Length: 137
Image (tube, rainbow, N blue to C red; front, top):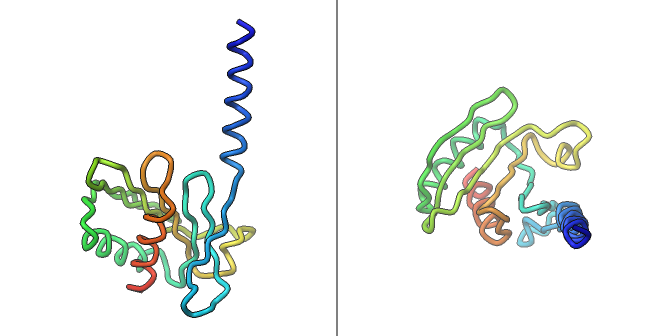
């Protein structure tokens, strides 16, 4: 019984540490702009200078060109989420949303993008998806 409680405590601490870690990511090193994205708890967050409708249309086109299989969409007033799958049946979600006013992404652009690849996130592939969408805008 005591071993189970210890294991649960260690697991809870690990989850809190992993969920709280944020990695800043440079998103445009070629132009020298100071824009940065963040990778937190498996999600890639980055600003975009476009409204969510434009980002949505660009994202579905780019996901199709990258060979992902789109499985669905969820349209809400303040966000649009695209669901897709890649080879190996890994789930991909791309969410275009308006960040809250107190968010660090709110000042950087008109909207923001949240990308997750797989169960635990994949920073490299998320950056690749983001770069394709940003360049297409």
